[in-house]
Image (tube, rainbow, N blue to C red; front, side, top):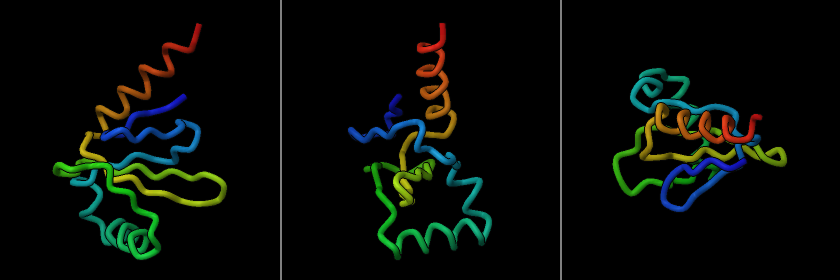
Length: 89
């Protein structure tokens, strides 16, 4: 299944490692370092033209991609839960 992250960007749910709230997580130096390192390595994809609210870490074929989204983690989680509930009998 696919999850829409915003601005015509979708990812397969099986590739999602984690979803993080930017406001809550960027307080930590480790998170800021992780995001800075991912940016330097060209692993960050900004799918937001608005104020970013979350980031989604995906892993596909051994590569990590960090998507910055204007959608909140609550919205993303609702979409993911909705998708998964539709496919269960």
